[in-house]
Image (cartoon, rainbow, N blue to C red; front, top):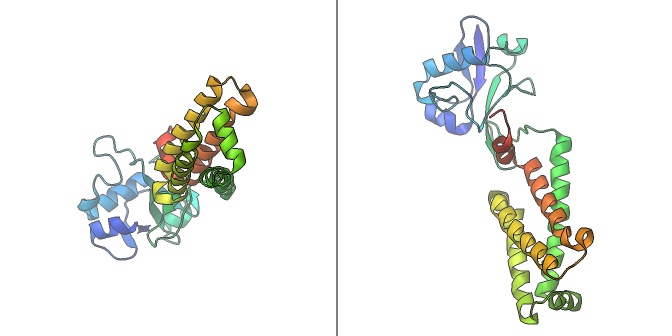
Length: 236
């Protein structure tokens, strides 16, 4: 039977092919039989999709067919009939920040649209709060200056704290640096927790408030970023 396979751009370059690949698969159409035929026809792809020893799927590779994510299905499970008949292609997808990219550069999410939008909303709320907080510190708004001084910091550091917060938030906003931004924001928010603990502030309304913001930062990022979902997935 003839199986149509679509590879991402970097693997097409490695295999030196353009467009779809057509494979003659002997026996039942499964992930294993398709990948075996693909690697036999294009030896340069050996080890790029599966581990050489375990034959397990590489963590940042996903398999799609008929708008279904088949990445965690058994390698020997039959593929959809549409794929076996050649009516629909078997898609090999490489994961990147914010989702997965197909061979034509389009988005193919391995998470539901609801989850994706939830991530965007959480990230937006966190960004708005942190941006306003940072901007008020940079502008040395009276409420920010008074609040910082009450926490035991000199007025002279308010501007610098605001710059650090805005820079970290900007890095979080940019997809390519979002993980770095989240890490920096986690450090900033951790300092805020320590400061509130030191002055004996109320637990739920003050001490834990930076924790709430940090959870929004990371939850939003995980829902938007397939790299993080792949890292924490127990099935990788």
